[in-house]
Image (tube, rainbow, N blue to C red):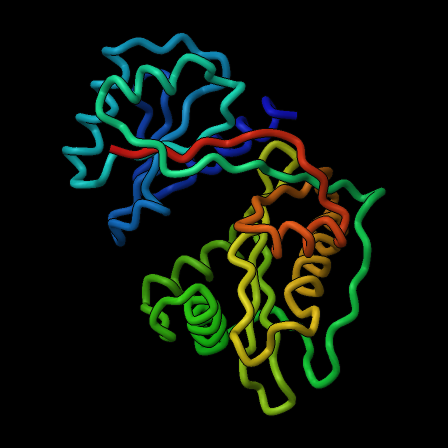
Length: 249
């Protein structure tokens, strides 16, 4: 499974506006944002990586005026972490990723007074991004780049879902990334504070997962940001499968 998830990350980064192959690495760069959560690299699974390869990767990020950063499944590049630490990188986090297959997904009801819908207009996309930004403690607004990236995700085969009230106030939502290697990553699940504690995050996750499988995708995967989200994802049918590393310089 580790190999398959890592290959899906490689394939995903190759779709970035300025995807760059740097030796054994693929760097997914985006000229419209310097966010390190968007601009990062990942290694080819089981590739032979040298100090010179790491130096070349740092140079590529420096030339693009981006922070050198990587995300990857640790077992697919077991010696890479030591090379990166020796080159001045610092571990940001170690996360366990979870997977779900069609046989294990569990439906979850949408709380009363709310419904889930896929945004089809830019104002709807802006409302979704503003709500999830607020849920993650950021400014409750969406930039044109946020909206364009969400639209591109949908047009490329991804899925977005917004939870809205009866008067069309956005309470939260999430996304599933365009399929890669028969898998799709679910992310950005966020619920605004007034709507928490009612099972909405679980309902959003379940519905996204169901829609992924309805399109023929074999595996949905995600990462839990804490114990609360871990429990939510387990109730939907996700189970631990491997480790990923976040590291930057």
